[in-house]
Image (cartoon, rainbow, N blue to C red):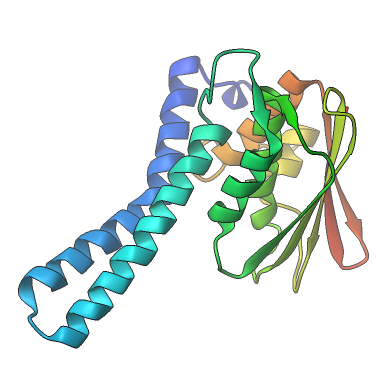
Length: 212
């Protein structure tokens, strides 16, 4: 493992901030464009279209920020518990009505913050395993205190999630930037949560696991 995958606290904060900005800049830009149409075009059809765009991308930006608050942020004091129902809700909002579908199975109730953050980041990483869309099935087993997570990524051209395998193996580790920080942070969260990550190909599917 090279030194470059161990950023300082300030570097890690900067990289995560870049990641969050990267995720919300598109929707925010679309909102601005929609507002310009409203202010410059008196055509009723154009204004209706602009309002529809603003409504949709505002929901998208809100969902992404809510997801980032739990996946990257403190989301409560150290050692706090997070409701798994809330985790499911914000995960569905994060995926939205696009080309990725979420199936959620397993445990209910509350779970430690670090483990829930790991699960959320695994979902974000799993999206990169399905470049053409598909189904991400989240299966939780064990107990809320000692859970196991398995994410089955099923869809056309399913592949190992981007960059995570390199961080797990320590081989061919990429430079850290706004695109690779998601996988790096997921790997670090697994270490903190005392869970072991693995990526396995099962037929045409990809299994992404975090076992305690």
